[in-house]
Image (spheres, one colour):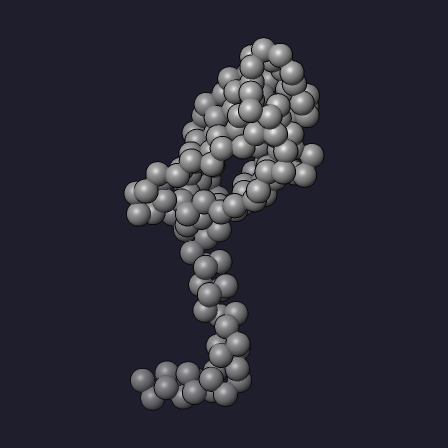
Length: 146
């Protein structure tokens, strides 16, 4: 059975792997939503296995999502060389369909949620200015004066 057929809401912030059977079968059709319920999840990184291959122009993997501004996005993949990308949302819909002739290895990707804490860490605390000892001393002094 195709694991992604189940559809899920995931608690926590753990990465999940989504994949078709290898090789997938003819006439496969899947369309399921997935989401992370943790409110700190702000985006999801999608990283494809380089083996991912589906029949060019006849079999399609589509990932739909709506970003935090309410704008709908559609990413469509066919053939090989799937590009990794990030979703500015905590959920997506996965759709995969194959026709009735040629089959290939299929697809596999890891969806890694990024949380509010990850954004703060990456964009704020990892900044060279923030890591500067003199800046931290200044912040401490300001906070003590308070």
